[in-house]
Image (cartoon, rainbow, N blue to C red; front, top):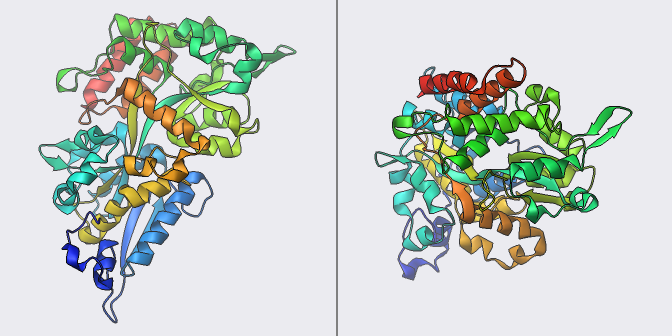
Length: 438
């Protein structure tokens, strides 16, 4: 059933009603189409799994809604949310903007998004609400009763590994429980020839540009029951847990020597490129890149796996930091109703089926997961990831500005390794920087 309207059952068989049930809009004779501008990091003319999925979603929506055209303006992912918020000051914001979870606090606190409750979620049926795989994702996007955005794809920062390298090294992935286990395991996969490292055991993105949760940030959250913030978004960085986490991350470079000293120059994109090329044995990224790695890996994508995060506690893994990409409608949009129809389609069950195949994302509706085509073994990694989420998912407070906190922690690690600064002092500086942004 459409999430936009409730049509009496006696009309369901009528052709006109069927059009409305599909979310269609009839274009009056002689009327021009509404053009909706959408900012996203994806490019529907490219060929990655998520790019292709977006292209198909737009085509399917436009075919059913001849009165609406979607104009995609590609943006850099790391600054997309900031640019969306700032564009409202110049009255140049798009109708729809994609916002990553780490920047949700910026969106919520700036109050530039239209409330999607009256436009979309108030029209959901009880069955659709029960069908959601991660209902907390929608609740996470609310503040003071306002629905600021809706999830397009849920992501967690995962640890990619290569099954073939683990087999060759005689390492059972299930036995990698602690950070010491991890360092010892990836050391066996490191390749050195003529004094030069050809393959590092661990790929770290410790740049202050285009980064996200690092190994150290994950270790810190694990030690604090998933928390980086206390009451009123007070950062929890400069403490004994932070010192232990930063020293562990630094030691992957300086003690265990399984990560490159040049890691401080590497962005997330750099490390994934290195992983695809076979230059690092393990790397972290949002799970949304799984399909892209499978598609491009020089070593054969079928060997790609997701390793539970190590921790300092052998009895439980590190957290799956939940994030993702979320659709917001600008409060300044002149086409809110049309934008809402597209966002509802893109984030609803039909759109989610395309995000799953060809997009390679975990479907956010159980009814999509239950379709026969998704029972195939090639979707096992999505089911495995959903199990990891159920086991150890963590949502940072949406109102807290967390994105640059990961940059602050990377800066602290740089100061410890390169500047020989005491870890606590470096973390005090990081905590002060994070606090100033709240």
